[in-house]
Image (cartoon, rainbow, N blue to C red; front, side, top):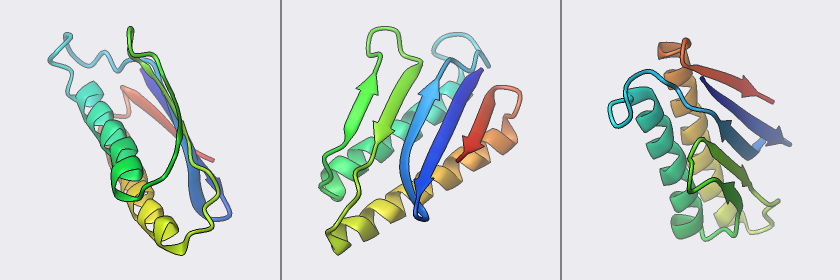
Length: 110
């Protein structure tokens, strides 16, 4: 099971953590794991490339199944607006996945 948590600070997503594997199918065929992976990697790339934010990212690149992202407090209004749009989209996507595949993912919103 994937355990996901999304943290908030002053009504903004301040970070998220993903651990585990969905085990919803064979390796390479697991649509839940694939959906969470694509959404989380796209979110990190968007925050870095589109919003221009330096993030704290910790992952297990060798074994997978672990990603921790911490978003700094942003003083730049334009970066903050972009980050909020990207992170709100991530949160909505994770909620949809968790609702549709609750057997394979546990999502906590803090």
